[in-house]
Amino acid sequence: MSYGLNKILKKILPRGLFYRSLIIVAAPIIILQLTISIVFFDSIWIKANKGMTESLVGEIKTLFDVYRTNNKEDAILKVKALALRVIADRIEHGEDIPELGEVFAGVA
Image 1 (cartoon, rainbow, N blue to C red):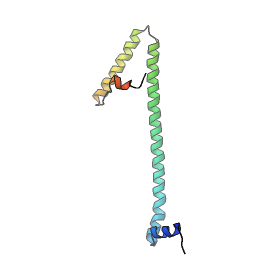
Image 2 (image 1 turned 135 degrees about the vertical axis):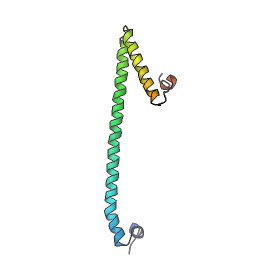
Image 3 (image 1 turned 90 degrees about the horizontal axis):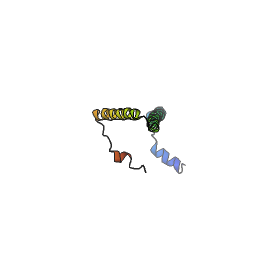
């Protein structure tokens, strides 16, 4: 006699030897590949986010340092020219540049 979950499993699982052996071989391979893929892409995602965050923090620190040296207009003009060159490069590559109001919308 089979009751409950055992009865359901007997109806679902294959009865033939070939299909049972196929599940025994294929299931671990599929599970292993899914696990490795998830771990790999998660680590790539974390590394990419970390690099972009460090880059952004460096840019903000540079702008802050330039802002603190308020007597040196020459340094401010150089940073402004560099920022405009970066924006021009982004435009050449076809990226959309957000409006200034959109960038600072949440800052108050």
